[in-house]
Amino acid sequence: MRAMSNPTRRRLRWAYAAPAFALAFVGIPVYVYLPSFYTDVVGVDIAVVGYILLAARLFDAVTDPAIGVLSDRTKTRFGRRRPFVLGASLPLAVSIFLLLSPPASLSPSAAAWWFGVTLFLMFLSWTVLVVPYEALGPELTFDHHERTELLGTRDGTLILGTVVAAAAPSLVGNLFALGEGPSAERARFFYVGLGYAPLIVLLSAICVLVVRERASGMAALRATREGLAALRENRAFWILLSAYTLGTLAFNLAGALLLYYVRYVLESDRADLFLVIYLLSGVLCLPLWIALSRRIGKRATWLWGMAVYAVGGAAIFLLDAGDATLYGFLCFITGMTFGATVAIPSSMQADVIDYDELLSGERREGLFMGIWAVIRKLAAALGVGVALPLLALAGYLPNQPQTETTRLVLRVLYVGVPVVCNLGAMLIARRYPIDEARHREIRAAIDHEP
Image (cartoon, rainbow, N blue to C red; front, side):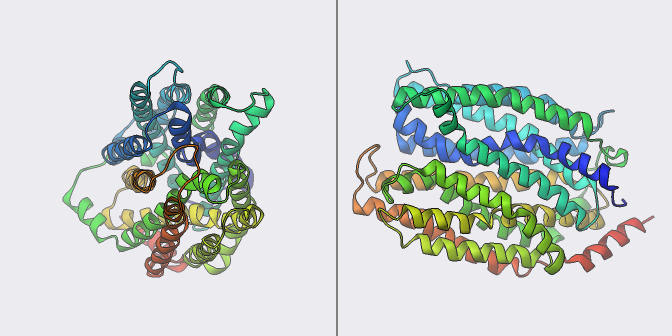
């Protein structure tokens, strides 16, 4: 496929990226705000919240690849992916609203059931929408650097949406003068859900109406032993997946514990501000990482991003109560790497899918995105499913001063483990074999196949 003209490229990029702005709410904000909201405001036990989040993500380990393969095999006049994107947007919107609006009359046990059921519905709807949506991206262009811009725009929009979602509770509170306290927190999340529900449907519809799928990608696929063997032999994919898994685990573990760390270690009430600083830094610096990848390659750019994050994270470990200003600066430094650790691996995965096409003779974006989504979700689930019960074992008490043991556990989980994971990801990523020249050879071989 040839590179697109500039007007077509811009229009396609932004239409394709549009849903990511609203879908961002199911990322960091869910793992940062919901655990604290349901434990400290709704009254659900912290360990129960962690177990529910872990169980929901384990459920995704089945649904994500299944939806991916189903979208690969779907054949309609509207394409393989777009019917899923539009059809799942409404149940996703409804489930998010319900998750953010638990009735105040619920007992703690009933609230746990409400949390579990609505969370499962949200993640299932999210899977049905997002796996085909992300699978659509690598099909739109085969140019090595153009796809970095396309997927970088999508991921940059995702980061920007995460900034807005992270700031949304505070913005809503100020806009409606809700004040403080449990009732105010409930009102904040009610209005946030009321805003995000229609936005998800609207932006998904824009993407579906503007973006067109390649006709050649709509044929049903065959389930062959050769196809499975090709997946096993795709060394580049397994290297990329292993490194990405460790990096994602680090990122989600830190995200899940940010509110707890800021409140109980730094003794600050500005966690929302720090999260916005981190994410806004990622948005601002993303174009620099994309430009750098053109000069030094995708692998080297990703390695540099992880290295900067590891250094900044190690410095955060040394902070204590009263170091909020220095923490804000380090949030900006580590946030700079967000674009590199999100957008660059997305573009590398698109190259890996091309290599799979060379090995298998099939385009299987849905399968790969399903596997990718499972890893991303399991990493997020392990972050809260392991960290929150460990905090409970360390003596965590909601809305109370924490013991030194609890604070130490918070430091280790929030900073120490993510830094180690990033270093491990760097060691693995160094072996990734597809550079621009190799990708050019892969595409040439595919294009010349009979």
